[in-house]
Length: 408
Image 1 (cartoon, one colour):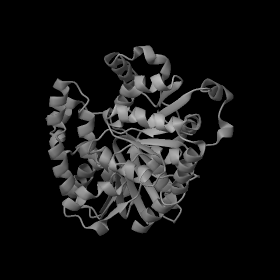
Image 2 (cartoon, one colour; image 1 turned 90 degrees about the vertical axis):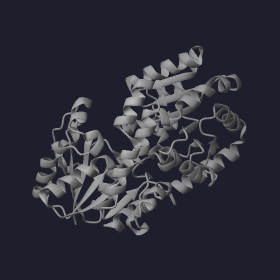
Image 3 (cartoon, helix red, strand yellow; image 1 turned 180 degrees about the vertical axis):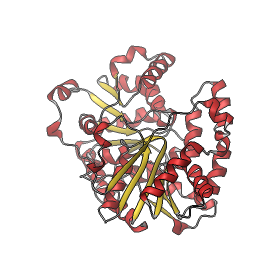
């Protein structure tokens, strides 16, 4: 089958490990994929041959200012007509038999483009996250004035309305966890039109090889108890809760080190602000913040960590999504600590693959850290082995890839 994937709206490929895994899974069964995306700074990947069976079509789109979005009513109907010609040209040149649209925010534009040109083609929606809920969580951390304006422009109820309208037009919908399906059922979408394809991994998609870790890195973290967070940073990620727990953790574990990897410059500034607000600037030696690192280097930071965590806050968004890094931790046989958001608790807590604390509760976080420190080596190893067993079995990309292939 000729599949036309659409990854637009400010999102570039690469990097997107979910898209890459899906492409490889589909071309391995004989499908041909053309991917419509925006220009990337990764010159290495401009060569369409880096994944056999994938052809990349790039288009130039400049970010639109908030004023222009307001004048075009884009905030309310979610349609960006600048993409129409590119989508039409993509369909004309690549002749896909089906469109696979990544993330909800481009779905209204794709459907309106198809309507405008009178194109009849089935659409599959690949929902990487609960987008309306994600916007709501991002807005929660803004200053009051910006929060009010953003809540009006990025209105949750408007996004949910459009989600209901456009998802019902899709031939099939892909979600990342079972917990994300409930709201889709409430829209009247039949269960047989929804498939969970999670953000799982395989040993050929993610590996932790201790032999590749530099001696400098090993020496740097020697004699420390390293609790790491690796990935994107935002108000829903739960790092504020961890920072609030820091003093209590350090008092009982003097060599405690909070390692944050993947921070952008504005994230680093915000972390410094939070440290001052919480009065923990004197604990700076117990906090290490690292900027963006290539995916190929992520495994090194996983390897030097004693505990890898996903401390999500209790938002609708975090109750209906799951991050790649959880399964990467599991593949790495690491001690895992997560908050009790439903998908995390189900995969880690209910299976005995790791430890769970109460979301948003710094004392609960500190208590569980102290439990881990006092845990016997055999009990810790048992949980690590359980995590690995699940990551290579029930929660492996092998099974999710098969589910994706079955849809097509």
